[in-house]
Length: 216
Ligand SMILES: [Zn+2]
Image 1 (cartoon, rainbow, N blue to C red):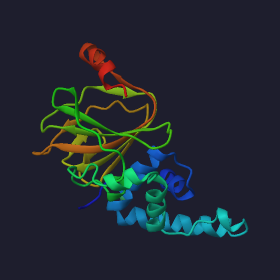
Image 2: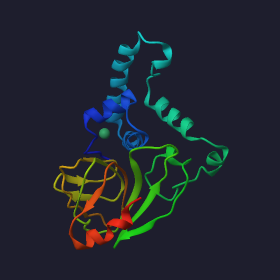
Image 3: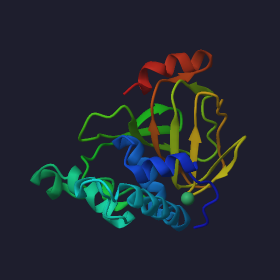
């Protein structure tokens, strides 16, 4: 897997500093699982952050590795025995990191022709919504803009837009300034993990008709 598109440095720094909300954290962690260069960058940032924090009480210090971060993420999310017992959520989704196994499973639902959405329900309140989006080959995503940011991690398949081609492992960061015109160019379904804040605004008559369906 060759990764061509990475999260912006500010986002990796915020991850290292632990200032992202859970939804954002999941999106960046999903990228890190498949991207050695961003993992190295986060480790370096944690090291710098650890030096700065050295004067603070021990509780404020990071123990400094991505693996530890992921472990802590797992521990804090496994809020009940039932959650641990489930442990198999999303196992049918290729490319999804194991730390989501303990989340409550959900099912795909139709939101538009050739497009299905599957929510990832977070165990704590988050400004950011997280969901999987599955689009069939040849799908042109409905033209849309959004009022907040949108992080997209490609799990399988690929899409193209004005910013380039995005395949497995790639991370696409969009904010309100981006007007997405996305086309699925893979021969198989394209499945992405999406973390989104704000509202998605669909343009055009069909888009406005679909708008109520995609609200979560
Ligand atoms: Zn990366």
